Image 1 (tube, helix red, strand yellow):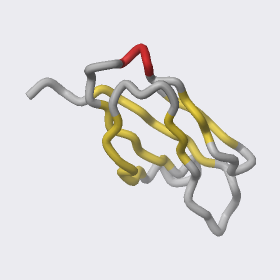
Image 2 (cartoon, one colour; image 1 turned 90 degrees about the horizontal axis):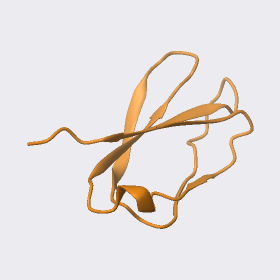
Image 3 (tube, helix red, strand yellow; image 1 turned 180 degrees about the vertical axis):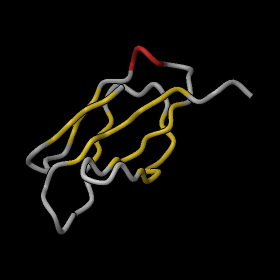
Image 4 (cartoon, helix red, strand yellow; image 1 turned 60 degrees about the vertical axis):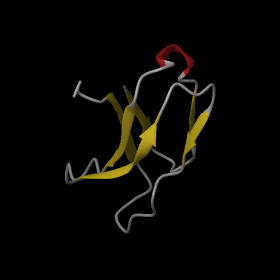
Length: 70
């Protein structure tokens, strides 16, 4: 799942459809493509992500993906 903010606002998602699954959340810098791990999440009804401050602008890309089966 991808969510983009060009203003740097907090992104709120309903992950209830992913109940019982483990998801990994990352911020991606759209200028460089560098990704940084945020945290592990599960199928929560509401989860919020606030982008980290950046010197070159407020836009950020949130990447949430299902963890590979172990």
